[in-house]
Image (cartoon, rainbow, N blue to C red; front, side, top):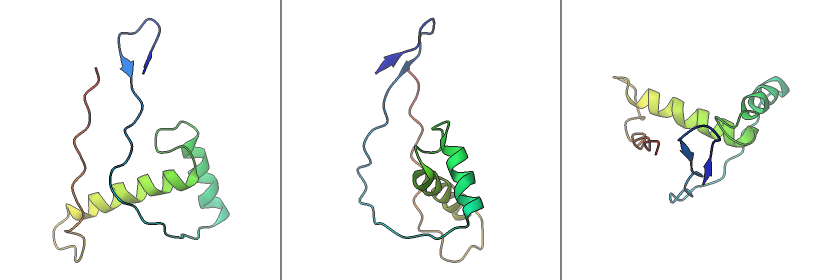
Length: 86
């Protein structure tokens, strides 16, 4: 846990993922990889290109699961509620 100086917000580390995961291989162009690396610099989407790609893919699948008449995507679980800031 870290406290920002001059700010009353406390930043906590993300909890470990308790959901079983499987590894897949995804081939992309160098341009896409570079873009994923650029997005990972801030740490907002992930710590590296692979983690950023996983986060973006999961977000898109959740988005698709809310659209009507989308075949095969209705079994994607909803996003967990966001944790409130302390």
